[in-house]
Image 1 (cartoon, helix red, strand yellow):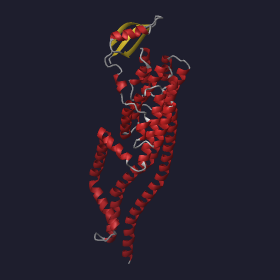
Image 2 (image 1 turned 45 degrees about the vertical axis):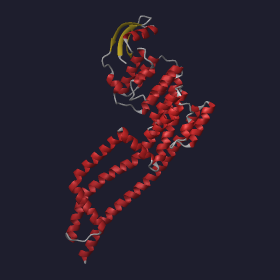
Image 3 (image 1 turned 180 degrees about the horizontal axis):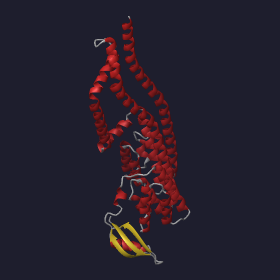
Image 4 (image 1 turned 180 degrees about the vertical axis):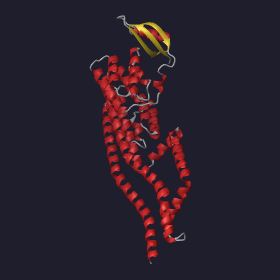
Length: 405
């Protein structure tokens, strides 16, 4: 839809400026007249603010939570929307977010709804967020919806933080181990090889594990650059393939077939489904639309496809609990709880309880994994260091004794 900029006068004679999307100048004129605004100049915008709506820049989830809660409070208190957004703009510490809020304020002053104004920034406001805001505006419960949204964003941020925290330790240790391996093979082992050669001569017989270590060091020295370049290329190609539609499906299927990981991925998906679907239903969004939006927010293409199949069966007249009861990934308790919600008309409140339960399960599993990963890594590193020490010190000690004799 094209964008138009306009200059207009209000009923009290105040001149205002704005920018808004409309199907035509006539449609915009009609919309403004209905709002009691008399347009003076209307021009079609040429690429204005395009970069902001399509920018890949993002903001911190913490900033989005704070923005949502403060907006909810001000809407509940009856603060005019333009004043509320102006206040939020002044309070924001993020320069990019300040610009976004300023543009949203202009759109709202121009007659756009909050949901439509937010929709121009999908890099900040997700499809779920936008749909819930639109539903809240339509139902006159925007403040309540914003409270729900803030809670949902907080829960999502907390879950992500837990997962990142659990992965950070092994990733850091793994990176240090790789760097240490190349350092030992390139800089330390050649010196040790020289010591061994000086002590026992070039024909000295070494234990098999020591010989393997020295041969590995020689190979790494000759091919270090090629190996590093090859690793970088392989990682790049793997990541690129995983991000492709076909690769993403295979990667997500692999995760769902990997022991332990499967359990975590499934619990996260169920928690997201339950909280997102409950929030959308509670906001008054239709079942089919809620399912479509929720499927896209699951984070796993295999489970997303399963939900889309369930949506087709719901469209054919079935209750959602029926197709989910035959799901490969959703446990029976989810379909049973959903069936109770359908019978009592309390789907949102029951699913929120399911979400709370599975979020606690995710926390428990991640905490358990973190507790196991640390000692396992320490043991593995201990074994590696022990092998290196044995392969180095053993021959040196043996050759030194032979020289002494």
